Length: 229
Image 1 (cartoon, rainbow, N blue to C red):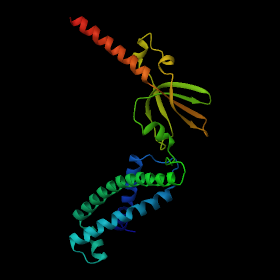
Image 2 (tube, one colour):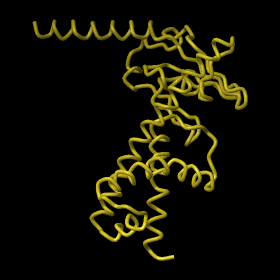
Image 3 (cartoon, rainbow, N blue to C red):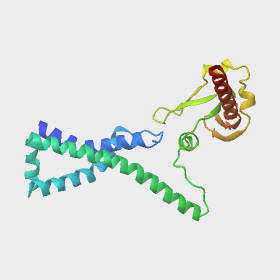
Image 4 (spheres, one colour):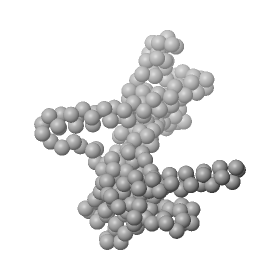
């Protein structure tokens, strides 16, 4: 197999693999990891529309009349670079479209499930639905096998790593003697339960905490204004 054949195979497979990578980054991937063979198959299937469209455009622009003429054009370095750039851009666009398509499809499926009297499908990502989709400041309690940890959510992972999160508390808060998490966070707004891993995550209401912060802020402003006067 010569270099031109290898380049041709790569140009056929890479668009799909790139599209899959873009979708994986933008969307929330499932925990199950595909085998190398399945990745290759998905890459080929995802490449077909992109390669077909780019090839048709190339036929129209360059006035080629046969597949042999089209293949021979890859000997032209300028055409090869242009073709690679076009495929790369189309692959990225395809990745964006696939994310939107998946979301729209899930929305349509849920509408049908509701009409059939069934529960909505979260897409197998309750972690995303509970923690990630609703972007806001959170104070969480994580209980694993009965051991509890509390703190402000600093960040979340995706299943490509493993479900995990960071709990943190700013050192500045401990400078205030009246900072008492047990009094400021008392109401639970929602609870995430992983039955298989024996993990419970409680999402606390931050209303009282926000009031406490506003009071500290107003007191600080008044002290600054008094000092300036």
